[in-house]
Length: 269
Image (cartoon, rainbow, N blue to C red; front, side, top):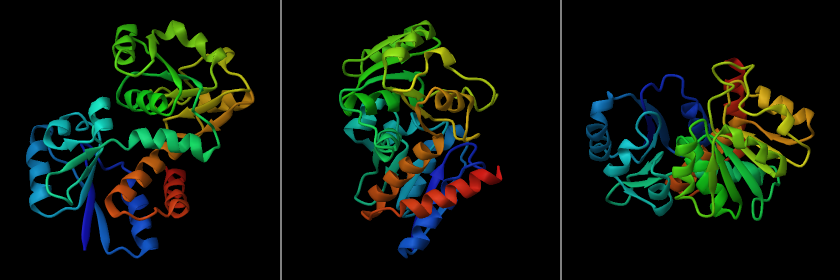
């Protein structure tokens, strides 16, 4: 039996176990997905222990995505983003990947949105914002990063090919954009809040909100009212997991079954 899992602190809220278990059941894999919650100071020992125990792969979540970068051999994209959320132990030294980026691009692809040549605005310059900015730029989009701290947006823009950055006073660039990603947690803690004024939204826009609880955020409601294509955060969560499954197993992930399981669990929250 293969063992995969998630390492983070906390992990009790995670929806990854049922999503991955659904994939194993559908494909007939003899595998299990378990969670690990080491103390922040013990992450190196946790990764070494997983390797020694023969665990096949780990997903990595807060607060360890940056910490594990130095504990694995990161692929070029993970190294550029500066964070690892997936580890593969199968072939010698642990390999690190960032499937959050694929979660972004695959979510837009799933909704038939072309990123090549698009003008894109990413709100937020944290971990999700970094992954989104690199993903969009690598897909051929011109990326502008708007962040509460303009200096942080500028620092990220300096390392993302062709990107620009600024404070939240630059959100008016959305009016000329075709792609918008909310990579902040605004709308999760306070569901009636939005990071983007409704006046900037329009019908030629595709909007991905990384927040998945609630599924329908105020940003997505107002974007739909403006005629935009809306993509909820469950798609990004699902498709980063799909990417991890495919990296680990070499199989095509059963996306529909994973999606059904994920959304059923979200509806119970």
